[in-house]
Structure formats: C-alpha cells, structure tokens
Length: 191
Image: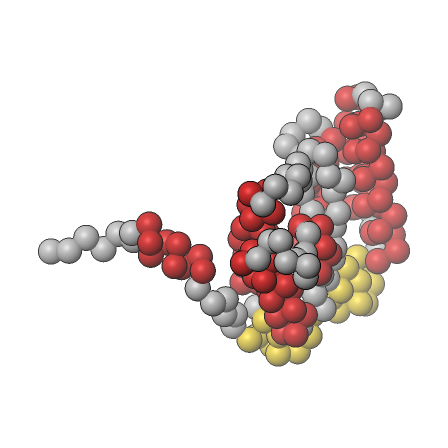
C-alpha cells in the first residue's frame, strides 16, 4: 500500500503548474487575464527585470471586463490571489520594501455587469469609506467616528440604486464589508 499524500515537491509543482481556466458563457476577457498572468509570472521569475510589475500595478491590471465566452470568474479570482501572494513574496525577497496592508490605502475595482449598482453612486460611497479609513489612520478621527462612518457606509450601500451596466453587487458588497470591518477595528481592508 502506498501513501497518496502529496509531497512538498508535488505541492510546489502544483503551484508552478500552468494556469488554466474554464471558458464560460459570461466570464472575464481572456486577453486581459492572460496579459496580467504573463506580467506577474514574468516578475515572479525575474523580480529585478526592467519589465517587472509592482504589486500595485498588478492589482490595477486585475480589473477585467466581463464578456461572452470568457474565463470563469471564480477560477480567475482564486488564481489572481495566489499569484499576487507569490508576487508580494518575490518582491520582498529581492530587497524591495514589503508592502504592508495596514499602510496601503484600500483600492477596489469592480466588474460591470448587466444589472448592478449605479457606478457613480458606488464610486462616491467607496471613496467616502476610504476617506474615513484615511482619517482614522491619520488620527484625525476617533473610533466612535469610524463606527459611525461604517454605519453610514452600510446605509449608503442599502440605498444604492441598481442600473443596467452597473457595478457587480457582490463585489461592491464585499468591498463595503471590508471597509466597515476595518473602520470597526477588525483586520485591515484589502483591495
């Protein structure tokens, strides 16, 4: 009888395996996903390369259009999270200043969907949450003001109008929850 548990080498090989995604009816634009993956994998392989991307640049590239016959969104999100973690580790081991989540300002990117939250109102709401976190971190707001801001964010989210070609409601809800968690004293929000 043989042991079927994965060896450390097998785990590392699985992490380095080529990334493959299912093509679904409505998924992320395949060329945009592939562009990000190529840039991040190139940077992980050669962090000192002149074409290397920073963690912030990679996060900004991770905003994909939803199209017909695109890559499965859940699979892409999971792969992006793993790759961004590997990129952060590669950048920090090469002497680059590690990016600390508690210092970084939360950034969020939302997909446009057929029926979602109004984009202008959502952007204003999220910006108000980021401004509240900025004030809390700088010391110009106390914990009570932060909790009030979190409550206002939740009320604002509940009042967001839904429109055609709006922002993905699940992503917006998760962003508002992350902002509220940080404002209420939980772990910092991540974008």
